[in-house]
Length: 50
Image 1: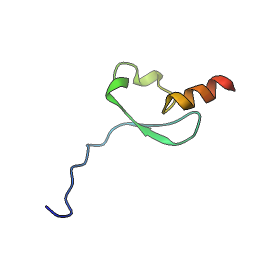
Image 2: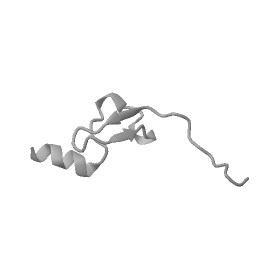
Image 3: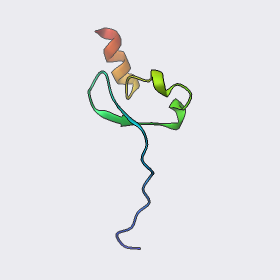
């Protein structure tokens, strides 16, 4: 098994509105994926300060 590793299937991605980095879908965002704009709480706080 050298060289083989488990990889997740392709998950949807978005670009963070605060830091402009890509982030992937998470299970906790399943219900409101359409409204998710930031990759983290820190980025969400940055948007609120602007």
